[in-house]
Image 1 (tube, one colour):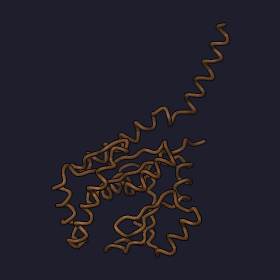
Image 2 (tube, helix red, strand yellow):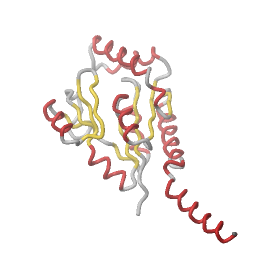
Image 3 (cartoon, rainbow, N blue to C red):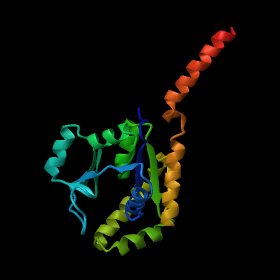
Image 4 (cartoon, rainbow, N blue to C red):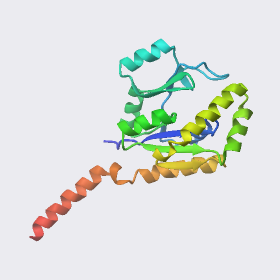
Length: 211
């Protein structure tokens, strides 16, 4: 029987580079499965339905909520984002480590529902660099960029809830650091309960024999 995988949430300010980090993790390591989020926002140039996101209407999204088909969902800058349940559970049970690239609202819901999940928050080295990256994307108007910066300030109030904060200054260093955190998390007591119980049982037998 395969060991259950780790459910990992990667969040970060818009423009922190979390999407690029996730893509590089998927390319470099073979045990990760990326959960594709469902959203009501419009696709950006080059994005494909069922690849980057499942793009749906507001009505379809709300129907999925009613059917309990999402692990979590949140409203971000006027659009819904959520994590479909079935794929995540299937991959975890197959022993793969599942990455959820979601915003802070959803991350906190995941942690509450799955206390053993691993939460990693990605940030650029400073706010000036964050603004530079947002402008450099060239995908949003100045008004939307200001919205995202305002949202980033709000999110900064909740990052203490994460297990780790990683600074994305050098992409591949950041990728390797997050992979290291996943491997370390695999050895945490809350994820080794079966091993602990087995050793405890064996030690109990030894203790009985010594009486």
